[in-house]
Length: 410
Image (cartoon, rainbow, N blue to C red):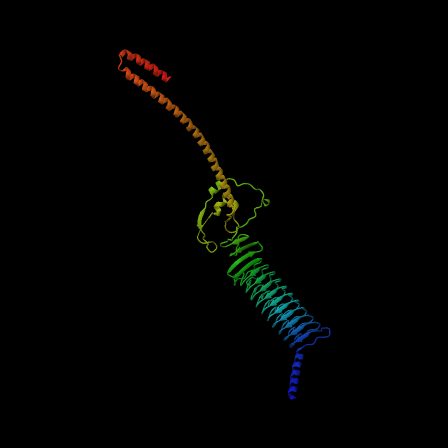
């Protein structure tokens, strides 16, 4: 009996202790639940509130529909409503902020009038005062944000130094931790962003990396440029290193998209003036090592300026369009070769005709020479026969021979 009485006394004391820590609201400010020493102490007309913990909701006046769990959570809230603070001193300074969710010790500690924020993690959004519609998740994420809005920081220390920028997305441990007031950034990966130890104010940037000293993909939304293995792309798309794939790179080439179309003139002459060179890059950190082949942009610019660009600090070239120049150069060379071939055929025909005529003339000369040789033989025979005759006859015969020779000549 004594044991039961003792238990009853203990239960009664415990009940009284809870009641002593609970502040009952007025008739107007009804349906509140305050549990803890001085919880909701100054509440007057606030309603539908639940405060649990030492001095949780301590200064609440007309604030309504708030849920504070943890010592000093929402301590200075007066008129803010629809807030949920969980953790020691979470939303500690919140005064007029509405629709906030702070989960973690010191989360949203200095928030005064910021609204529609979600802070999860110890110290997340610690210095936020007026910032709104932010989502910070992770230890000290968005810790120094004061007025920045519409930011999403996920990861321990993500957006740690951020103060006033808006519409940023930082995902990863200490992602964007060094950027101070930038806006419209997307940083993805562990310590993604400018190197730790620096303070920057970048906007409209993209960083995808797994360490702050090596960025895989960088982009600038303002200039519409993106780079791989470089944070200073000189073109809309730049690659620092090798690039390739299993298919060819396609470029728009539809005739309906082009105007002022003309065939390249003097292509062969231009090709002859170009100088192909072998070389090595000086900066092997940003260029391929070893011997390369190509052109010198400054030299090529004097011949084919259409493929040379002076954008950025250095000259650059498009190599692919040179194919069109080579095609027309080959056509010109073929045309020249065809003309030479035709000239050679005509010249050969002319020479063949001359040779044929010479052959006929030679045959005729041979026949004449043969006839003359026969006649000469006949004369020699006659002279031989006459050498044995009397002298008078010889003279007569010699005259006859001369007459005959004269006939042959005629």
